[in-house]
Image 1: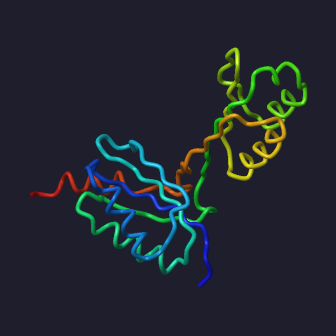
Image 2: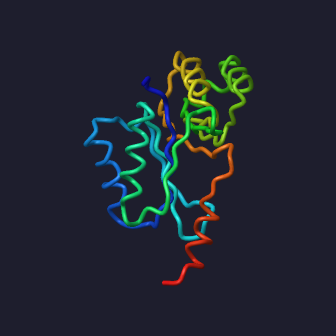
Length: 177
């Protein structure tokens, strides 16, 4: 089996220590987490982890099974890139004089569909949402001008197919205890 990039979505209760236990599952198997994002989900009081890894389908299947054994985990899914819509976000802090002195920077911002989110006396900040390749391309174009600071988020994604998590939760609510 060949390695592919997989996006793992984990729906869980928001409990202390779960992130540590989940990352331990990857550590034991020597699988590097490429990206990790945790946020609220579309379901009240349920968190969603988005974990990106590069491994085989066999390994990702086993990992998802191990993650689902965690008591706080409601359900975990995995998808290949073609099955999801995903983005990353990045911020670039640049010296403010360049915005006015270098017309090329204004063209780079416009052509890359980026936005200036703030301008201060000493710096301005550019925001870019997109695929990793788009962000890396913008980085390479801005690098010769001097990037004061750079940060990129982990992947955020939604599946193209309907996620059955809401139906699953409704069924769990209706089961007698």
